[in-house]
Image 1: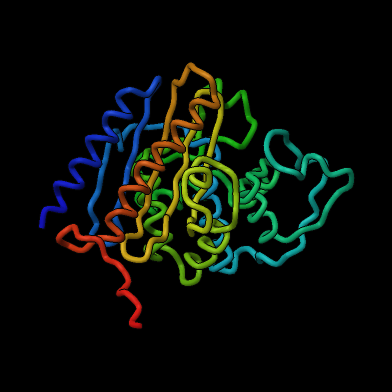
Image 2: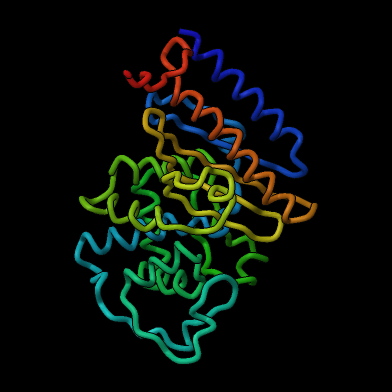
Length: 283
């Protein structure tokens, strides 16, 4: 019906943006309506920064579904757990007691690094590797805890590709390869409000299940975006950026905005490319 021409134009626009980026960038877009895909450097490996917390969330909830972790169990968060960087736990003046569900929520909504390291300890790096293998993510690795600068310098990094980030979110969106109930739990947490490029790019009120990430020279965001007729999954990842980090944030947000504008246009169009409007009210 000509829709392929529209997709071709979208891809050309996005390729021009990625070619002009002042570092290395990749993007993978999957249309959940018809499984159309735009892939630009989608198999390139990038540091994930905090976007790897999507995988940690799914692993923790898998253990909960298998009754290996009680997500309502009270856990004392003491000084031995604390690391710096993003989050709030490191700034509490007294030990706190919270459940694994609370810890998972802090890991995603405010990207709390202390909460994240507690999840990594509870799941275990070896078990995490098993989950990632079971999920079929050949290029994704959870190689270190948050704020482990020695591991970063030794290239024991948390990595993935834009395509595999979308594949992970696709499993969550569709419940594929996950135990019953895990998809719903992940979506409920990932849909909670948070700051980041996707939140900055999309109109207020847009339902999204995402997790951004950022480190020096690295910015990324990956999420499931709900539209009435054309829901989609998108991952945008960048590395080697040598300019102002705020410009990198803006570039990722603007790229997401370009994608969303295109998908919203498709969402409101017929198969022939005509706008679908509400019928006029009868007098």
